[in-house]
Image 1 (cartoon, one colour):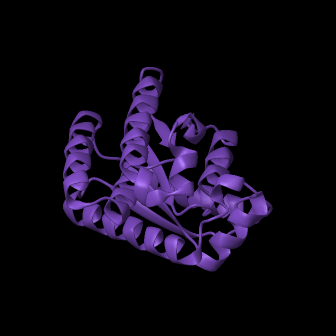
Image 2 (image 1 turned 90 degrees about the horizontal axis):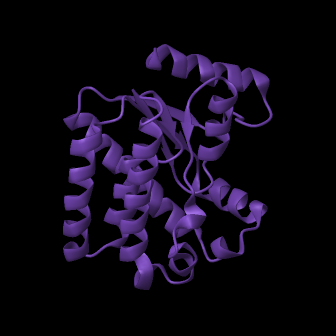
Length: 198
């Protein structure tokens, strides 16, 4: 079984992944800094979008394949559906056709996720969190970009849930639930996930 955590930048994906790791789940983390185009993308998304998204897709594929050699039950702090959301938002028709072909190959090999956890958060709060963590590469991100990204990710999730009956879905509002500092909220989230995953 596979859990994929998805949401916009700053929604709390890594915080939730760390919480699950601390509670016995088998995690595969996104090594986003290993993508050689990551910094260039944030400096000029239109110019470097295609190579960035293709690389993230293949990187996630490789990271998950390696983890599945150790354990068939994994939690990813990334999502192939999120990769598709980024692609739909930023690629032109020809680029998107190539991306979708590769995406379909990967999903056919690895299968669909058992559970998608979508972390909901308003664009204004996302931007505040992004600025608070102080990554210089993310300094040009604005509310419009975050709003578009959130909409595209949610749209791709809805399409998948309509097409794939074997995939469950859980939405967590990270403006309501404190993933980092509230033990009661953490326990409630763990209970929700356990109820679906088991």
